[in-house]
Image (cartoon, rainbow, N blue to C red):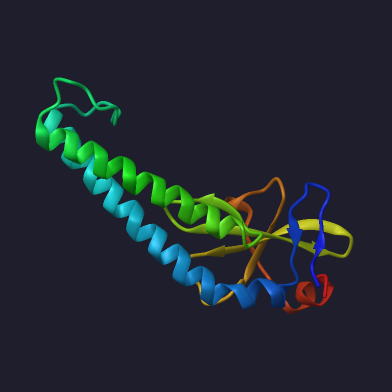
Length: 151
């Protein structure tokens, strides 16, 4: 059974993290598709209003019918998108990048807390990094390190 870490997140074994990968692949894949759809709606709305500025989905009295429809659709899609990432986080993982599907699992090497790192498209959790290192500090989980991971 997984334990808790000092920050309140769940600490996973490598096996527990990898057991979630099939489910995460499904959930994150769906989220990435939703993100692409939202970007398309944002582009359409920017074209409709003739502005590259940040999109405002507030319904205004002077909005055309098509702009109002786009704003409603965009607002609805964003709500579903946020709920989808909440569902991913409810599994105990940390969402690091919603554009690429980058997730971290807290793990433990010896008595040190680390992040086991997985990105959408990877078959398994094969990388880790120190808490303060981020994606740029990702290192492969070699055989020696795997033996030192919390079991």
